[in-house]
Length: 466
Image (cartoon, rainbow, N blue to C red; front, side):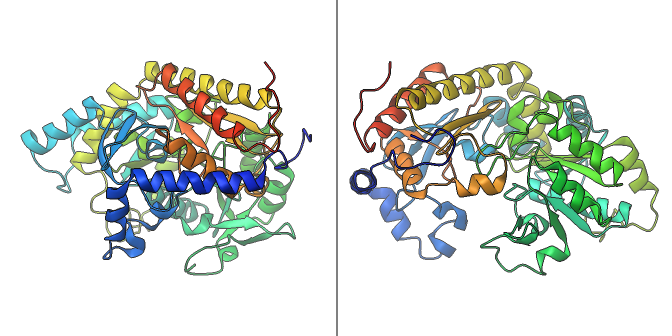
């Protein structure tokens, strides 16, 4: 059995197809109300509120009835251990009490969900973000996508350079500049499936593989890159961790070429209270944080270094007030900022991260024990409170390798097998995220069901190693 490459020969593809068909039948029989709700959704584009909700292994989506902490209940009355947690948006857990209390106070007692007026909560949140991430000046949005877009506009203005460099298969929301990959010739190319690109992406962007400093230096040498926009670890293509010295090398090269550095911590916030920036001692010029900081209420923010903020504010030719393209009417609204203050101050605390990380360590160890027991050529990676398993070994070192390691049929089977036994993973990949309320028993439950799923589709039925 190969120990150093993607190898799916351990899976009996006939058994896999038959087992998947059985699991789909089980799912359909157990969820008639969800199935009917989906069939009746004729006024929605793609039958769902947002088309990515059709990324699922089950044929039709589960419809939500109730959610609290790390559990959700669907309209058919089944309860699930939620390891997806809104793909990080609910990392604080569903409806955490401090956040709910703050939202109720803002809505019911104080009033003013959105007013175009600042609140004192905003300065508290900015100060807390500075304490955690180091950036000196903060501005708010409702999504990390918008925060990235506005940060990109600022760095282009301040450097006078037109292009943004990203890593293939990075996650920066729907930012146009990020939808670029490295093609077979080693040069930038449009990411497959990019919908309605306004211009050829190579006009706005450059790409360099994660963990490849030589490629990064080659692309920066053109002298037209305003900023490198990157996740400190890739997340949305499966967790791809930085190799020793890589992030320090990125910072050294960007400074040498007069290029700014933006760390997008939307997902890598799972690394700790100050994300990977604090956990790994990084020194970006801009930090973007989204999703999780509002406890489920739409929130996002970007932080600038002291120097960068001063440079921007000193530019009298830039319209930072009205139509300059760096703001939105609802951004920084009283409700969103109140939710951020409660979530950061009382829910996603340092103590909470300690517990969440311990659960993720236990999760990764449980998955690794199954991989070892059946001698599978798979791997598991962890980023703080987040863990993920891949059908390849060693773990991929860049986004292109990670995309190539995908096994759609196997992934779909594992997802529907798990959900039929009350466990939800992130639908886009095999990611599990721990909330402050997730417990050891929840993690151990996943390990047991995961082993059951794996054993059911192996090419042979060996005695597992004990």
